[in-house]
Length: 330
Image 1 (cartoon, one colour):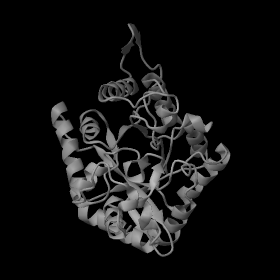
Image 2 (cartoon, helix red, strand yellow; image 1 turned 60 degrees about the horizontal axis):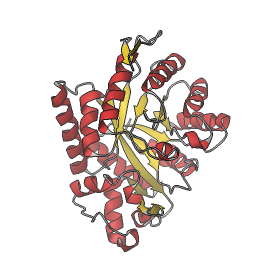
Image 3 (cartoon, one colour; image 1 turned 180 degrees about the vertical axis):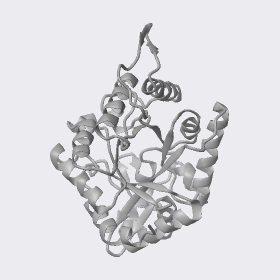
Image 4 (cartoon, helix red, strand yellow; image 1 turned 30 degrees about the vertical axis):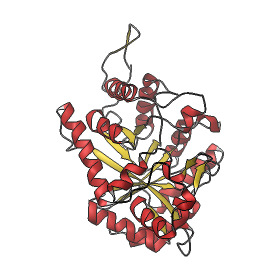
């Protein structure tokens, strides 16, 4: 099976221009585009995806990612069905615990309990079932023949298990090291067993941090940087990143200081964590992930600081268009 590659596109431009950029991603060969749900940007993710759907014909479109804190599960179910009507067979709903979006309104991330209830509720509504909210019974008046798939976006081990228990699929930030990927899959299986189900049709997308440059040296310095004051890049969006690095054999202390990571350590971390280097090096690493671990779909997540989170991924787009896609089998 040919490796599918999706990419994160921020609402970093006026919405019509972002939709045009998403069309460029389709033309370059990407299989999907995920747009973040940051209401504080002043631009809505689902309006952006709807406009992009009108300008594309093939790629999968989804939020990357939304959450049940800033959007009620009933609202998310309605939006998911609407996206399915606009782009039949090309819509996903990805739901996470929240980070910048919930933090910008002073709320904590969704708990395991909240996430379980939200995913179960959304999936039931999309199947046309009745749900009771605060003593009021309700359902969606319109549903699709194919319910929009509901994925969980996860980083921590417990959320990973929950995804295997209740979701249609998972977007996982665990890196590309074979041992980390195997450990994550075991967590999914644990959750599935808890629910008494199999994961035969369960889909996984591996969130893959990426920085590409001409010589690769600067790209491999990301582990030595800060996402924002008080939060190292390697703890963004979750300190669970350190758990998966440990599964890979890289044991950083919880209180590590980025500047104290050596260049050799940084290079090892980058190889385990994602795609860092020249376009050719990124191609080779991606091919290894497919051959070593059976990775079938990745979500390219360009590295950034908090201030740079709305930069359009033009370097990544060009690297894939010119070098990586031509070099991938299929």
